[in-house]
Amino acid sequence: MNSDSSSSLIIDEQVFSHLPVLPQEIIAGLAVSAGGHYLDTTVGGGGHSRLILQTAPDVQLTAIDQDEDALAAAKKELAEFGDRVKFIQSNFAAYQFPDATFNGILADLGVSSYQLDTPARGFSFRHTASLDMRMNQQASLTAADVINEWEEAELADIFFKYGEERLSRRIARRIVERRPFDTTTALAEAIASAVPPKYRYGRIHPATRAFQALRIVVNDELKSLETFLAKAPNALVPGGRIAVISFHSLEDRLVKHGLRNSPLLRVITKKPITAQELEISNNPRSRSAKLRIAEKIN
Ligand SMILES: C[S@@+](CC[C@H](N)C(=O)[O-])C[C@H]1O[C@@H](n2cnc3c(N)ncnc32)[C@H](O)[C@@H]1O
Image (cartoon, rainbow, N blue to C red):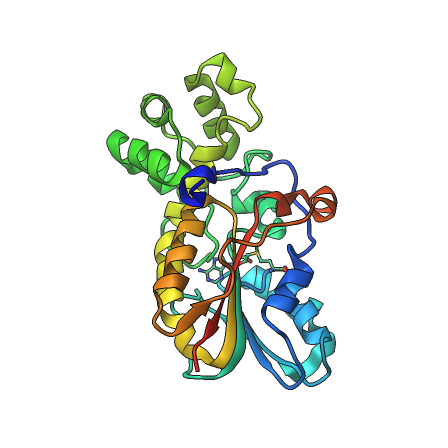
């Protein structure tokens, strides 16, 4: 089976854990070793960074996140490592990757548990909050701008493309009929009202895919990922590793092709590494994680 077409979009709105996903697989996959310098481009809560820093007392880490709140939380979480860690607030696509510097580079894509669990950030329809969804709070485009101002056809298009939502047209029509929307929950209710009952009581909430699409658009996530995949390999030392964890098929497809098509890399994972049963039961978010790893050619 072709993993591109078979991997469907699975989004776990209800279950989100603070544990870093695929922890051993990341440490082994990046071949973290004494004296190495690693780049965590999505430090989030600092879970993976902590594991990397704990591997040996002289490991150095550069930690990036575009979310200033995440970066502040990571600074606290990693304070004990002192000047072994350098923090940078940036989109990983905008980061000036230095040449041949890092022994390993990690990207653990998507939103953090902190972002999902903080109602004011507007990522989740579990809480009533304003329609925001910006990972970088300085960015100008919000989810409210998209929902209230974009044409019906554009909305249908993004729900279909970035949410893999089959009912994209109906949902877009309902939104345009009922807008403006101010809150996550009002939007989720309108979306639920647009779909047939069977769909309304399925495994995932009917608004899940549309919310996913909105988040991708607001944060320009796929473009950032493509830029990252083009720029990051040059920042590895020869033999250095790059590891990318994705959570849905659109991302995984870009990662698979980006690593494979880079003339600087040799892919190590023919198939993506996925979580074992034990991890899935402790950390449900790991269920949809796919890890791909490549090595810089000498
Ligand atoms: C899934 S969380 C990372 C969790 C982290 N690995 C841990 O163990 O705690 C993803 C983080 O990446 C950040 N992020 C997502 N896309 C980004 C981008 N393009 N540039 C920089 N940071 C990004 C988000 O703000 C979020 O904090």
